[in-house]
Length: 418
Image 1 (cartoon, helix red, strand yellow):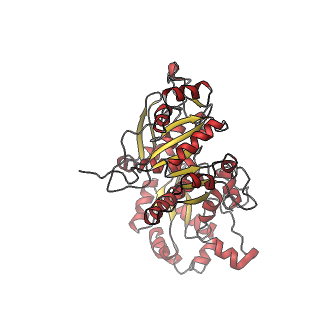
Image 2 (spheres, helix red, strand yellow):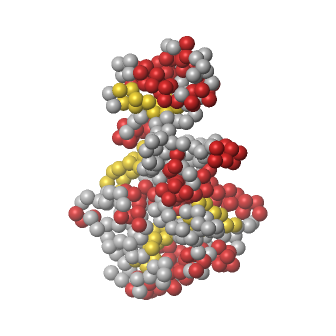
Image 3 (cartoon, one colour):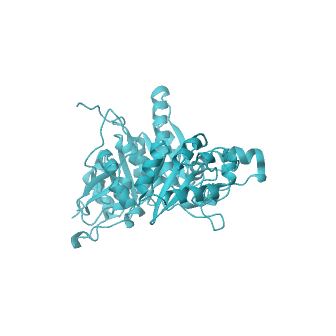
């Protein structure tokens, strides 16, 4: 099978991001073929290098590599420099001239104060596309507020609807907002590149965690807008407030099942339950009635589920009536699923210092090219010399930068002065 070059081959991206949202954006660009130069802040690099699992072998214990960093930053080239040093900032300006895209996730204002804001870079490279990722945007009352995924989740009204009705709000312990913001930013960069191909114009893009989380309210924003404080979305714990039944249901034996029966599927649900009399029962006959009697519906469903010898048997009965359902799996169980393994959703990788492990695969598939089966992540500053030579610096120039600690690299890598 002959595959075309990856879609973003020939584009160069300057990645000045850390942790998850920004690196997710640039990782997708890298997998699509872009040459992504990962700028890491001296002396220790992206802070995610200190999270996840580190190499176990004694000779690699001091390595800058980690599973967390690998997952978010594979397929990029690392350049580690002192962002605060005038020479470091001058290097960034020099690189920006040769780049198509700059992605950064500093607190708003940091890049401009460093002389690296969009207007500064546009004067050097009129076609530059710059994407700034932040908690709440470059303007507005919250623009200078530092924060991460869970802060945005709280500010956007998401945390307030998670948890038991009589308990305190709960958090989703995965970086949903970070990952979704990174995906949205990568999409926007792709659109901006297409726009530039048509017009020749670069542009500035904002992507924020708060905006992304707020966008996840699929139905309630219009309700609040129209009904005001007479409607306040409430926490329902394991049940969806719209009834259905929709939610997490106890099958007994410490096993749980998610059922998502929408309003039009109530007749199918009562057939699965073997209780046709419920279809026209005034307590359940409409979606509003089932919502008002949400807990009663759940009690009926859970009693029925516990009548089965196993969760799989209950799933078979539901699927016979085409009711969407799924077992609640641990991550361990999910990673062992043949479906996820076959599709590469669980992606097997190998690092020279850490060894073999798994990371999530790409959430999208392209017919024109396949995923790279052997991705890798740089050690801190692994591509310093290569990137700086491409920028026109001599061997002596590079050695001087090392001597002044303007650029740094992992101790496992030799510098030109060694």
